[in-house]
Image 1 (cartoon, rainbow, N blue to C red):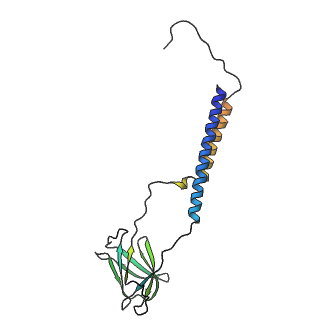
Image 2 (cartoon, helix red, strand yellow):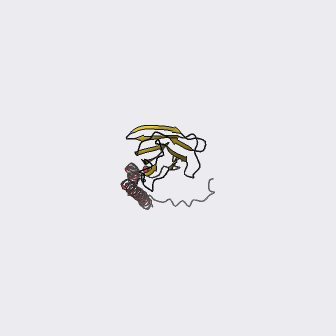
Image 3 (spheres, rainbow, N blue to C red):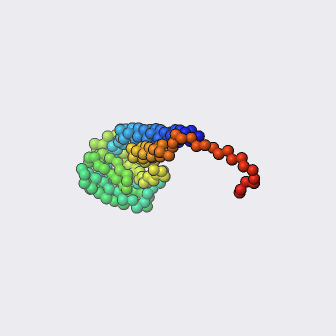
Length: 188
């Protein structure tokens, strides 16, 4: 009977190690595929400036709701050239900008803009653009980063300890079963 129990313990330990290995390999493959995926960048938006380098921006969330009192910054060649705060309707008016590629940022959101003088702007250029303010992402799970080489090593170590203990506690001696058929009442 003990050899059957010992065999079951070993099989169960190997099954646990196998499950952990499969999960680690699968999650590892998902992570490496995610890390090697190409990152697509949004296109640069062409914006037609008004006289005096004036541009109007609309600050809103992903649902299109205007966002008042949001700080908006404009960068040019690595330097902040303008900072403004959106009004009650989410609008920001910035003046004194020059033509060229600028970075528009608000909070964690940002986009690249190509500002044009009105007389040379391409027909596809917009008179204003919306700044979509993203909310911080909050995840409710910890997920795949837990499943890595450390988890694999821990699972293998635990399984190894269980197998060693099961092997040391077992002997090849058979234990006789007592056939106690003495008469009398059974003790509680």
